[in-house]
Image (tube, rainbow, N blue to C red; front, side, top):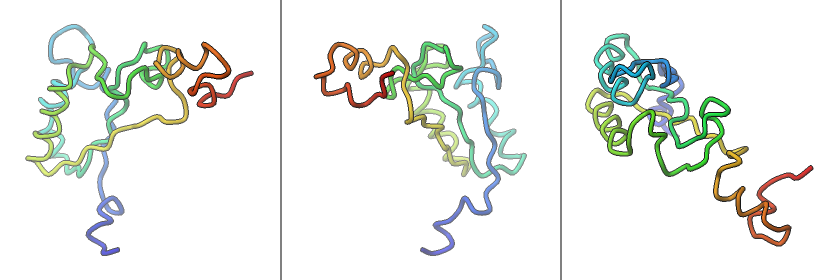
Length: 131
């Protein structure tokens, strides 16, 4: 693998916890639009990438790490359109986005879990460890 493909080896990565980073609408909760509004500032800091803590739909029992839908955005942070705008605006500035993707557990509100607990014969039952 060529060195140019190993961009992360020397990258400056800035982690953002969206809930507390930048509030764009005055509700006291950081959001995706707030992150977009700070991209020029982040670029001036010299970052190469943003490590974005979970923004997926979640009941927020575990600060967003209890994901109930991997294909949707938590409404307090914005919309899928906001995410697409974040990706586009970051790309314009040469900033990469790394999503914090939690795969070792889900929310107890995730559809897989809801199906899994219905029956030991359910196809999703083996997705979880039951004690």
